[in-house]
Length: 261
Image (cartoon, rainbow, N blue to C red; front, side, top):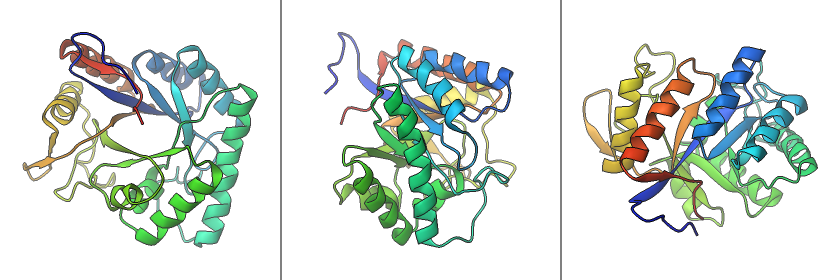
């Protein structure tokens, strides 16, 4: 259990979805983000990534003492895992196991503990509200490693299901995405889905962490309690955003730290 430092009000995790780089410039941006986060979910070949990209990010995370976990998705590199997919649960589970095993193979070669799993994109969204899919994912993760936590959306059906299981759950909120009144994210296909202003991202992060609420697209405040804030590593403003959020949290005497389970 994490012990609060003197003067610290509370702790919150900042996680980044990494290993999604396509060139040296994007990789450099991801590596710079590590200075400001406490955990990372790393793409493992479903939507992007391979053993080499996993290793590059894991080695950097090890140096920076970042908690790590796989970021598996629908096997859909063409659509970056962001589209619905016509696939049976059996075939999906087989693909996810392969992705997660790839991640574990690299992590084990570096003697790095794996703390969590976070599903990506459309799979993340569907798992949040599909009981049958959610149960499959929970049972699969439990069979792989009983000590793994699952990161998922706060106030979701998945959170309810997991909290009635033996798997630890880490509730997540986004600083760069807009919310609907049912606590779900506005679809990326809609023009107002993303929060691009760094000032607005910092404001949303502060509201989530300190006030435990978030403003929806209909201008209504809803309650939200999150253990971790997500930063998207593939966002051009991500580095500046995470810097600004980190500074805000420091001023508020809030420590950035991996979830205590």
